[in-house]
Image (cartoon, rainbow, N blue to C red; front, side, top):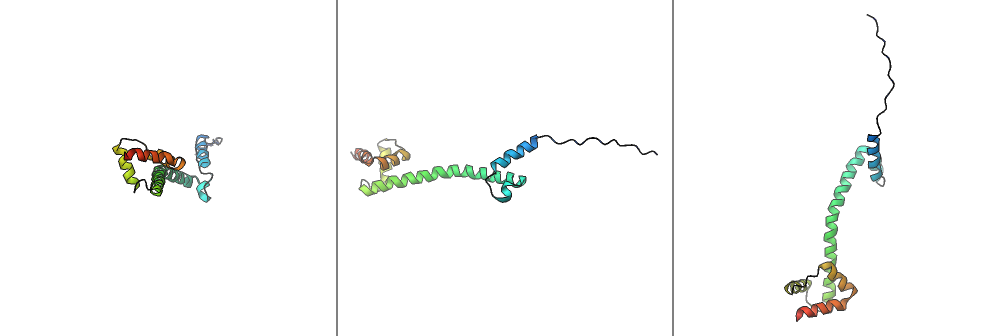
Length: 125
């Protein structure tokens, strides 16, 4: 038996698509600390975690702002003794079909208290 000569082929380098994907993920995680910005597997896991947290916090942000608006409205109402509580004001607003959302009411309460007092007097009539 003769040894067959194996002609060595030139080495073929992989394409750039995987590298492009990894660099895109690295850019996302560039501000993370330690391995979370260096190792590809860890980066992908951390990216998933970050996006999940961002999604959850968008819902939490809505809740937090609503709580803030309610607190502001309640503080102004109780300071002037217009109503005993925020809930009574909202109840009477709905009863009179004055559809002002809490965000707008909070802005009125802070920027223009007299306007809120006028609204509350209108409800009482």
